[in-house]
Amino acid sequence: MGCAGKWIGEVVGRIAAQLHRWGLWLRIRWRGRQRLPSGHRRWLNHAERAWRRRVEREYAPGRWEVLHLRGALIQPMLDLLNRPSGGEAYYGGVVCAAPEQQPVLRHFRGDTAVDRPCLEASAPTALAQPHGGRLFWCGPLGWHFGHQVADFGSRVLLASVDPRGGTLLWAPWPGGNGWDALAPWQRALLAYLNPGQKPVALLTQTLKAEHLIVVPQQARMWATPSVAHLEALGWCEDHLAPGKGGVLYVSRTLAAPCLDGSSLRGSIAAERQLESLLRERGVGIVYPEQLSLGEQLAAYRGANAIVVAEGSAQHGLELLGVHVDKEVIVICRRPQQAGMELPLRARFPRVRWIEAIAERWMARGGAAWCGLTLVHWERVAPVLNTVLDDPLSGADMATLQHASQEQLQRLAATVPLQLVP
Image (cartoon, rainbow, N blue to C red; front, top):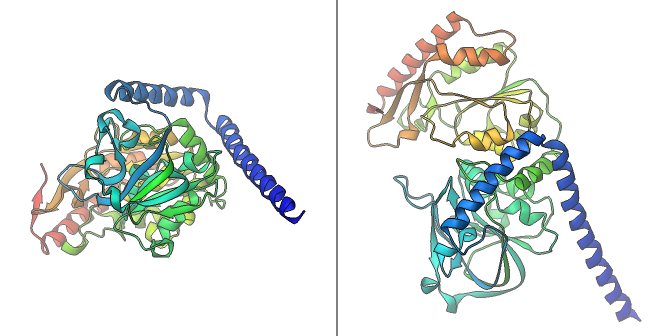
């Protein structure tokens, strides 16, 4: 009788867990239907269908749909973001039999695959550790916040809310010694993107999976995300603490002061002076380095308007769902490529990009994106004034222009600079 009771309890528990997972999936879809205006949904669906047709045409007979693999080999990351002059975004992950026919296993930016597939011929099959049960492939887990959010982390949400049980599998780079070895923001990100509360596993050696589920990439840099991904993000953000409202400025001055060679990591000249002028007008200044991920997202969610100095922190906004009325302004520090605006426009239809670059300076032999950008403040200020009760004046613009030149001169005294054409 005791064994029978235990068996019945296990069965009831499995049924209850399954009903809970299906209930979560249905609630997310219902909430998403309420949040996305029909016109915005049509635009996103049209882009998604066009992308699917393109990828299925180029990777025939591959299909852009959830992939089920039996006995799949999965390698740890062998390289990640280590080619600043171009090349693959990463090397590692699920081993491909025919990469030219398996688009779901590839990693895209825009319309281009930017990964280096692991081929069966090079996989260390004899060293693979067998893994029973069901795994969901989530991709690489890197050290770079912006790339992790905008580039690598979009498979997990639909995997988390999938009604089937299983474990989410991440491949940390470099290496990995377990959950406690992850940075606080990485742990917070994995928890935030796991509303289904599935168990999480970190890949540290080659595995042979009994059953591997691969969800197609749901968000790409330079492209719109899927509707299902946005619906799930909207569900995630509903569990954040309420924000304070008002106007926020997301700063890079702590991440990239750009005052000498050691701090030349890409910024807008005179940003400190801009902060001071905005603070005088009641704008809240956000330094992402000083806040937990949850605090950042709660602030973004609650703000009426957000001004962002272009950089990695802006990708934190891509962890929110759709906000049709929120004003978002991005001050660019480099020319924008086609499609760069789409990930934010999908979430914030009223987003505006200020591309008012006057000069870009970088250290000789350095990377152009790590330079100091001088902007035309007379073109930036009128856009900022649309969200300020007390507008920036002509005298304020002159102050910013003078501070920009002073910062450039101070920087040039510490490191040889060259003007970027």
